[in-house]
Length: 250
Image (tube, rainbow, N blue to C red; front, side, top):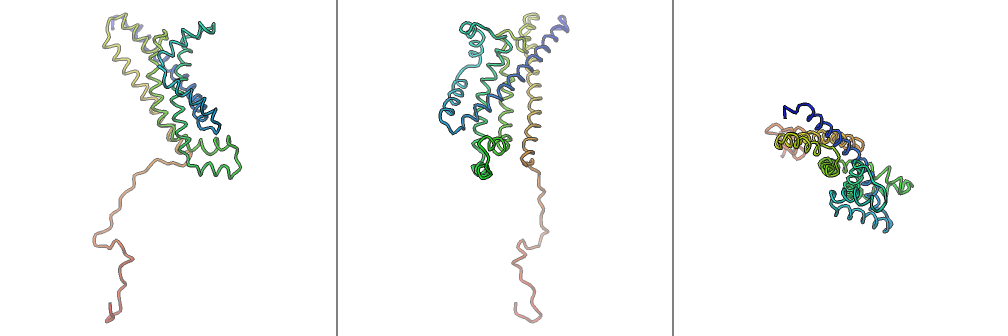
């Protein structure tokens, strides 16, 4: 790879930037989808729950790679317009991982104690106000850890966009491999790149989790020092009799 020089490194680092953009845009769309569908799955109207549940089941049971290819190649034949490969990938990844995220949202909302909702009713809040002021603030800290895992999965899922010709890390690695004829060094490098990106995302989400818990008064657990009582002391001082007067009966 040394004879090719900096040009190949430029291809790989350009792929890193494209991968970051794909992750950010898809995550933004996925968060919107997750909250809309996840909240709808807890709605009091059965038709809303049915439609949102159907969306979840369809996207959960569909291959993201096949769906991405379908959006890019089949939709233009039926609607007469075609998405740019980058946005076709963002749409597919956002809708797919948003469906997974909706289950996280639904579970976190359901985990809020019913007494909290009843308190909102007692205060005269509308259903939207109860959701925004009472339920979501308490459910959000419970969503962050699984959202962290889902975000890492989304980052790794961006490698699928190389089939559309989007110049992400994987597509750049294929170009470098074709130019150099070397596979092991190239794919080892992009493995490290994905790991570094995932590690950075994890650190960022840890900060988000800490802030979310602080906003509802859930301080991180602190180690408590164990104090030992001096030997020879009675652990139940309330049971020790008081001394009697000299000569008196005990």
